[in-house]
Image (cartoon, rainbow, N blue to C red; front, side, top):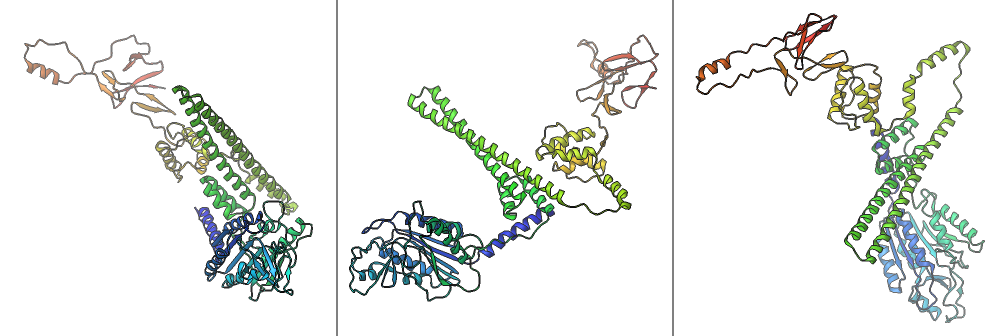
Length: 590
């Protein structure tokens, strides 16, 4: 019970600590524009936005809004609604993937319905970056804008300049935010363009998915790792850049989990054994949450996977059986060949799924065994590397004697090496209780009322206080430690104890054994009397006591005979017949 309490307390510490670490309210708006109507559509932005939104959801953000292919009005409305959600937020993030342009030093994000023919059209047809910054401004701790929009201006070839001096740059222009604790991350440095890449996601988004929500990773460090990955993926052709600054405190989008207080290896092993005794997926999940790493954590994960594989195997087996039954029914009913063919295909598919589930279960069992071997190997290595305690020559003999005295008996060591499984304990305990004379009923492995009565009798005669409601390893060891009979021999009615066996007791002459095993007086049955006789004398005769009949005379070989319900027999030579207090005779031998 103490181990269970410590395990539950540790689990509560982990859950509460993680909740405290995640207490900051985090909100995110994710926009992906691909289906442009007036310029060439883009492939990746919608995929990138969906992946980033899923990343934030898995990181347990409080609000994650995903919007695809927004028009000008829809984009402005989305920013307005998101601005309301940032008023009580600690961290606010806006991610945008799509076209972006720079006009005269101002950056604009392009809705899918934008039609920009002149440079001044950008003021009305596009969304200025300043409007994006206004949406995250209420956040208290971190305001983060991520733009995967540093592509070539899609309107550049047709766009007219109203002023010759108005500049139209490549990509987006570098910018320094006015508000503190604000970061603006560009997929490419100001004045350069970003690549879409050949995969499902752009190189910049792919790196964000890898590093951005790493628990405990400071956000500036995360973008540094993103920069390194993008430059490596593009051959140094694209360099992401972050504008803005933060204070001296480390800020992470996902806080590091609070590690539980260190516990001794013995305590971890006890918690593992407790989870193993429960044997459910929830128990293994709790253990892994309390101990994320280590030998026992690897074992727990393997055990959890084994349970999942077994559940899948059972489900697949049941599905295959149902498909086979359905096929047999259709054949019996003479269904159409087409229906039988379809059912046959389903049966084959179900059987293949069952075989795959069986194979997966075997694989998980092998993984459990491999993890167990790795744990034992590592523990043996650690034990061998520990130097023995220094012992002088004078105390060497005494230490050796103490070591030998501390060794367990050979049979105990063998039992410990065997590592009896929990499923075998009831059956083994029933066997041992029967050996020491405590009747446990049938040895069937079911710990029922008869087995509990047997263990209660053992407690009474052995002076132990074992829990009779549970067949435990402690009870098994306690009973195994007794070499001889513990519970006295208890015989049923009509039997008596002779040494370690119960023998049937013979009835005296004139008595016979009834169905319950008791000796009853034999009643005389007279001949039928004529109906004309007086009834009163007959009643008197029936009421008179019947004298017991003496044994018939037989040849005496030892001088005495003894009778029971099977007849009479000579008393064995060297023995004599003795009367008891009941209706029985017994044979007493010297």
